[in-house]
Length: 164
Image (cartoon, rainbow, N blue to C red):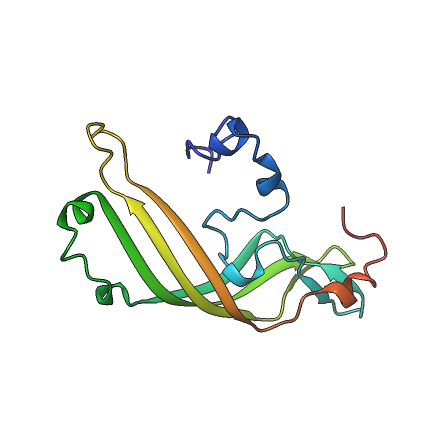
C-alpha cells in the first residue's frame, strides 16, 4: 500500500480531499483477508470468558477468496478500438475467513468463520493513449448480497468502551 501512487500518504484520495473515504472504511484496498462484505464492519466476537470483544483487526488470519468470471458474455465486437485500451471483467465472488484477535485477557483467539458472496465488476484502463509507460489502472466495484453474520450493532452495546 505504501508503494501505491493513489493511496499513499500524498496520494490521489488525499489530494482530492477524499481522505474521509479512507478513514471511514468506505474505500477498500485489496489485501489482508479481503472480506468484501465486511468492509467498514466492526467485527465483534464473544470470547472464551463471554465478553464481547472487537475483533476487526489482528495479526494473522486465514481466508479463501474466489471469483467466477462471466465477462465473456460481454461482447466488444462492435468496439474493437475500445477493447485495445479498456477491459471490463464481471464476476461472482465468495469469501470465507477467520482472524486471530486478542481477547479480553489479551490472549490470541480465532474468530468464528465469516462468509460473504455477491457480484462484482472491474474496469481496467490498459493503455493511456500516448502515455504508453503508465501502468494499467484497475477499479473494482463489489456488491455483496450475502453475509454470514448480521451487523454487530447489538453486540457493540456490550463492548463497554473497548473500541478505540
